[in-house]
Length: 285
Image 1 (spheres, rainbow, N blue to C red):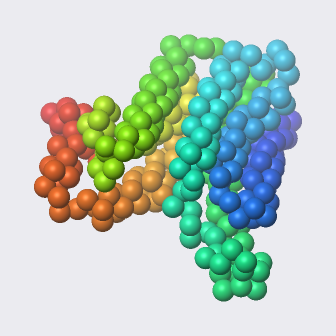
Image 2 (cartoon, one colour):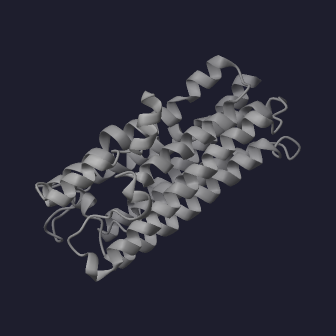
């Protein structure tokens, strides 16, 4: 019974993630526009949370499970709307150019880029990303479905506090950078205002805190084995941001554009790559 329930929830999460991303892929491939990428990619997180929330009986679906679902929904709605508005305003996301053929008339599959095979691979990774990151929330819903009482204790509140802090940091950092870039007077300059004066990637720092906070809120007080298994969620998010698709790409882009300029090199020396340097000094002490 418990295993069947867990399988149903994992399946509901996978179906939601796959369904939203499949629609996003189909529309993106047909239109050859990437403007729906972040809207659908982030929307899959929200769809997964609500898909597993709906599986719960009404009596088991309140309290902590509902708080976790609401937290994911708040994060997803904010990030998806911001990224969609930004890409519609700017016109394109240059990081995704490699997924599309240079020739807009290139035929599917038989052209030199074999479009849209690379695009399909990218959307498959997006599907896996949302499913893996939602594992702590899915597991918390599974515990509630099995009859486990999930009180909102001090530990859970601490985790939600970390989530809230990360949410605010990410939202403020995104707004500050967007406002900076929207000012023509800052053309050709890197953002070093507000939170960006302490960290070169405060938005990613906030994003990592979001997933560590959700994992902490969902797994605090639960069996160590389950907590360890679901820690793949924040670990995976952190790995992607720090080692793969986040920090390394933007650091390389900024170094190529601004590297060698004394002001930029000074900015790099006085700010942390992700964590602010005052936190690193405190950790060293």
